[in-house]
Image (cartoon, rainbow, N blue to C red):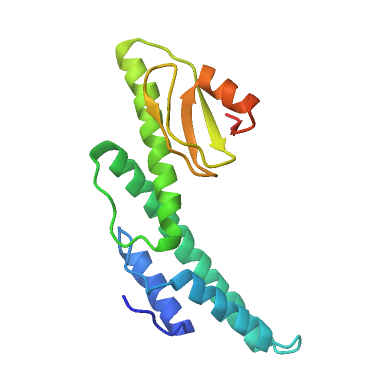
Length: 176
């Protein structure tokens, strides 16, 4: 979908489409950035006494939040489906792609580590970590290849490897 001028009507139309569709709908190019600019312009135009404009702004914010929440839920569901079947979703915005990829990685790692161990009877201790810096791929204690990782990536790695990376300040263990 080409870049469109953001209006209340367009936001409402997109919200209704997201509400009706079970999968992600196609958003205009740079939708979230355009909405951010639109809201910023609206906020500048509102005076403290302008109750009607203030209500309109709150309604727009609610619609945007609803779109975001619905898409977030659909992205999480799509990540679960992808981890099981390998089928990627359609209509991810650029802003949503890294969120989606992080969730798929987490789910796949969890499935590989926990489910495989449950089914084979092996129990390897793993830590869920977040990378504090870009890190090239490495071979873990379990002889699997991990990475490469970008700053902010979340994954499960063997406990021994995690402890070394934590000591070096490369990762931080997530609670859980």
